[in-house]
Amino acid sequence: MATSEKAAYDALPYPRVVVVGGGFAGLAVVNGLAGKPYKVLLIDKQNHHCFQPLLYQVATASLGADSIAHPFRRTVGPMSNVAFRMAAVKKVDPANKQVITDRGTYDYDILVLATGTVTNFFGMEDCERTAMQLKTIGQALDIRSDFLQEFETAVALDDVEEQRRYLSFVIVGAGPTGVELAGALAEIKRSVVKHEYREMDNETMQIVLIDSNDKVLKNFNEASSDRALTYLQELGVNVRLNTRVVGLEDDELMLNDGSSIRTNTVIWAAGVRGASVPGMEAAMDPRSGRYRVDPQNAVEGMPDVYAIGDIAAMRNEEWGDGHPQVAQVALQQGDHLVKNLVRKAEGKEALPFTYKHQGSMAVIGRYRAVVDLGQRSFGGFFAWLVWMFVHVVQLVDFRNRFMVLFNWGWKYLSWRNTIRLIIRPYVRRTNIRLR
Ligand SMILES: Cc1cc2nc3c(=O)[nH]c(=O)nc-3n(C[C@H](O)[C@H](O)[C@H](O)COP(=O)(O)OP(=O)(O)OC[C@H]3O[C@@H](n4cnc5c(N)ncnc54)[C@H](O)[C@@H]3O)c2cc1C
Image (cartoon, rainbow, N blue to C red; front, side, top):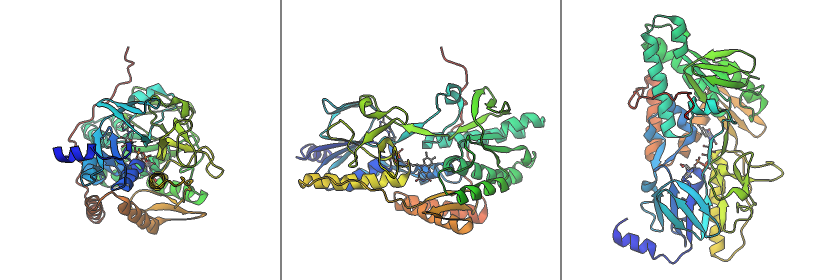
């Protein structure tokens, strides 16, 4: 913002809306309020929006990080009533209507919390210390570096048992993230490892997918869960259902059936909890870490504070304690809040939110996916085409869409994904307690 533009922004005679979090929900609010009679400040600890559903593709070197990320300043640059601060929110002070960050304190008239989720380790501290996560671009790049480093170490070893430790990748949690990641790693084993690491037997590599439930994709229709399991097994993924992780010590992952797996790489995709911020405890559901909201997304007992997307728990008959934590809910709640804020500016009453569920989908390896549309489900190649189309359309801008399509086209036609670069080596976290 030039000095004159900053002065013009500061002088806007509108209510101040502070939006914390520029994920699907927060960005929908920012886009919707552009040009409306509000003075908007977007705060995010990252400088970019991240399209999380494709993070696993960055982690498995199918897409570059910049294909699925978009800088906030590029988005808000043309919006004269919107500003951006890269800052981590440390506390909210609802009594004084202030947001306290590591870069300063900001006053608000209306606060929109859209902070999403963090990985939930369910109190397993040893896993929290060393297991890898997949929530941010940085973590996706860590996974990418890690598996490439493991390959390079394994190929230099003569002892097959030692090699197996480096080539055992364990994913905990068979929801969409775990399933998609397992499928992509299995494809890497069949193509990249087989053809480019010829000095070792690619069968030494194993991908293990663990879940305490009795099926994969537990929130999908039965037919899709069964289909996904078949696809994974056909790809050679070792799926271990009804199995719980009970501990992780150095390179040994212990399971509830008394067995253990020697592995350097455990990726935790078993659950999330709300990315809550201090100061809002009174409205937080302690089990999920989400904020209880009314049908207009207003946070219980906190005037002028709204929560939307993954962080919000709106109880209703259809969805119980809260809507599913998926992109569609976040987008629709963001859009709905914009409508209500515009109505507020016009002196009209706020309307309740109704979620329109548009289906669920997950991709498994190359050319196969499962899709649920209501009670109907289908899989295979057509489902994969639908999955591709939906994900490309949802990307933030034309450049992202073009880059994703180009990369996928190149990869699927030539099978040469050339993003397998170790640029920022991953340094493994140790499991030694810090005193
Ligand atoms: C690997 C993965 C795969 C997924 N796949 C799918 C899928 O296929 N389909 C689907 O529908 N959904 C999927 N999801 C879920 C979907 O991404 C989320 O439901 C969606 O991102 C929620 O949007 P949100 O705006 O609520 O939060 P987010 O998109 O998580 O955005 C939260 C934002 O808040 C910021 N933030 C958090 N805390 C602070 C703080 N204290 N200070 C400042 N900024 C903060 C973060 O940096 C982030 O930008 C996936 C999620 C992951 C992690």
